Amino acid sequence: MKYTPPTTTGRGHRFRTVDTVVAAVLGVAIGVVFWLWNLVWSATEPLFVFFPPAQAVLYGVWLLPGVLGGLIIRKPGAAVLTSTAAACVSMVLGTQWGVLVVLAGVAQGALPELVFAAGRYRRWGMGWAVLAAAAAGVSPAIWDNVQYYYALPLSFQVAYGVIVIASAAVIAGVGGRLLTTALARTGALAPFPSAAG
Image: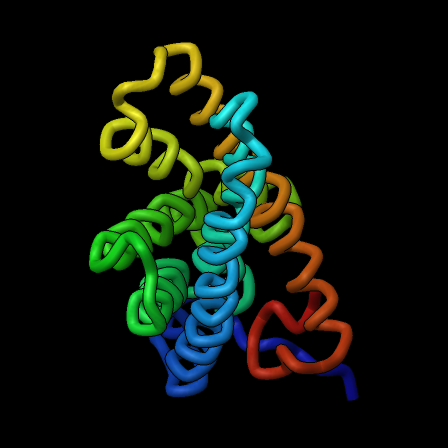
C-alpha cells in the first residue's frame, strides 16, 4: 500500500502536537549549533580584517531554522516557531547579542514565512527554498548595518548586505532543501507532507 502524506490544505493547516514538538526539537538542535557558530564567528573575525563584510559568508547558518522548519512542517507559523525557538536556545546558552537574538529569530522566521505564504504553502521546491532563505537574509542585511556597522563606508554596508543574502540563499536555502530531502529518504519525516521529498 502506497504511503500518502498528510494534506496541507484546509484543516491540515492546524498545528498538531507532532508539528509543535518537531518545531521545538529542530529549534533546540539548531540553537545549540547557533551557540557553537557564535564562537566560530568570533574566532574567525581576524581572518576578515582585509575586508570585514566578507565575514558574512558565514551568516547563512543563522538563517537555517526558519527555512528548514517551513520546509519540513509545511504549515503557517512553522518557520517563525522554529526560528524563534532556535534563537531562544541560543540566548539561554549564551550569546554576545543578548535578548536581541530572539528579536532577530522572530524576524528571520517571519520573512521566509511570507515567501511560503505567497506560495500558499504548496510550493516547496529548491527555487522556493532559496527565495525564502534570501528573504530571511534581508533582516540581518538591514538590521546589522543599522545596529553594528553604521560607521562603515556605504560600499562596505552594501557588500555586507549582498553577501548575507547570498550566504542565506546557499546555506539556508540550498542546504535546507537538501537536508529536507535527505531526512525524507531516511523516513524520519513520515508524519509530514515533506516525507515525499
